[in-house]
Amino acid sequence: EVTQLRVVATQTLTESVIPCTVQRFVADHRGYDIDALTDSSNGILESMDLRTDEFDLGFIFGDVGDHGVHQVDIAASPLYCVYPADWKLQTSTARNELDLKALSSRPYIGLSETEPVGQIGRSLILDAGLSPEIHIRAQNHRLAGEMAARGLGYALLDYLSAAAVASNNSNTVSIAPIAGADPIPITAVLARANDLTRKTRNFIEHFTAAFQQALPSPKNGQRGAK
Image 1: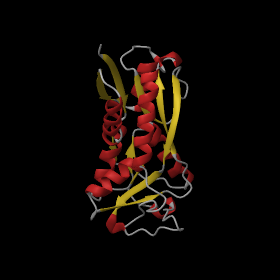
Image 2 (image 1 turned 90 degrees about the vertical axis):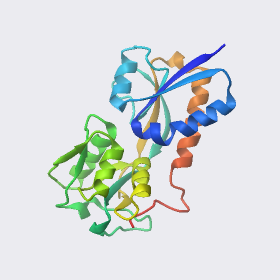
Image 3 (image 1 turned 30 degrees about the horizontal axis):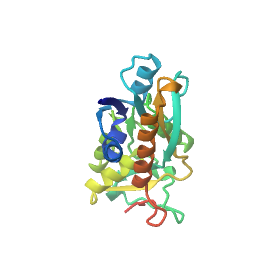
Image 4 (image 1 turned 135 degrees about the horizontal axis):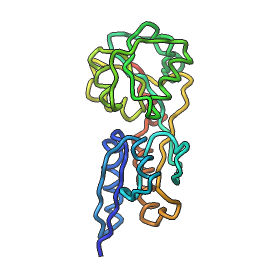
């Protein structure tokens, strides 16, 4: 008998964590058909909240907020600034963190503020006393980072997106953790608590392991600014 598992995640998590998760899950199980889908954090929560039964399991940035869905806390991602390498900004502390005040008067690439990373990024900018004009907005994290790599401004992103952009654009972009920024939660969501079956619990366990593997290790640090 074949059991279907329909998994949805944000684009960042789909690209960076879901492939490894599925590989781990399939190695442990036989007889599963897995549908891997992509949506925004807000879109995933709204679908779960409406009980459309479109997905069995979702992975989002942030928590469930006011949505009436079940959540499983997984981990958290550091927040990074992605900016053109030729800005040559100075980082501070042994962790090579960047004070956002160093970005005063620099152009900012905005993210949708309906999404958790966009909301947190905007709050950090305001807390730093900055009021940048936003002439470019990106729908997803990776897109914002790729535009920063082309000299169009800076973006505040989760670590996985920042690291992917830096890997593809090593000569044109720098990344650094943001001083004083709390990490953003990564959460598994289900429409109902009783949807947390053995198979979904096992998939979450494999996702958690794959996510932790993708984070920067304390030894090689935070991949600070180049």
